[in-house]
Image (cartoon, rainbow, N blue to C red; front, side, top):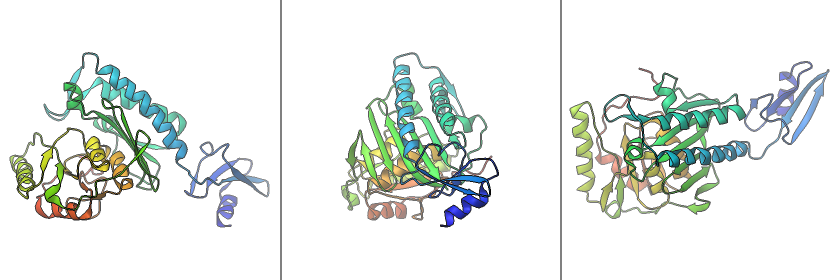
Length: 328
């Protein structure tokens, strides 16, 4: 068996090593106690771990910490909110954003110390946002901070978990609605434990479309943003809505409440959790250009059908938004 041979060659004399055969990863602690097969050769020992669902423990822990962080957000909504600015007068951050992210990362890091993290507030403080092959947690502690500040009822927490740059699972908790959206690769999407799926709508003229609008430093970018809204409305469609939380928008399409969502200028932490949920709900996710979705590209189209997604990509115009994996 190839994995056993690899275990024999990788293990060190006198030290027990753990090799996970499905994910091709080594760790001395993470797989300890799991169903395993011990291999010995010339006094060297290794344990080859055989697990049918290698990331279930990660998702179970993520659900627990999400519930705990959700309570922190709900409690904060009952108190005075301390507001600070980041890149502009409309780019807001609160103490709660920072505390929630610290809670999530510290809890996960204690249990999975070898994993990597990309968190909105950590990146704002100077941390890297490069996505590697290492198991990586991509975290938005409060998606919809402006909504949170105004107590507008769409405030969410979003966590996506990626391995080898592929999203394995996503969790989005819409705090004030008390809706927990979850998805695992190949296992479907759920809201509070009940299966969800996209509407399946293929006629864009019968569609409700979501997008977001806001301040743009470049006047041409602002004109393009508003021009795209006019273009979509005059197709025509049933309407456009802007709930104010990218993760909630993605979940609204995933559960069939809306039929499409497009956005330029968001970040990987806005999209990672929702990307898993929309895919597992049967939706389509692609780049604004109509090409494959790129988590680090800061733009996306999602829809209930490829027909609608492609129609949107054909009629809207893009403007430069940069990338999350290019610093500066």
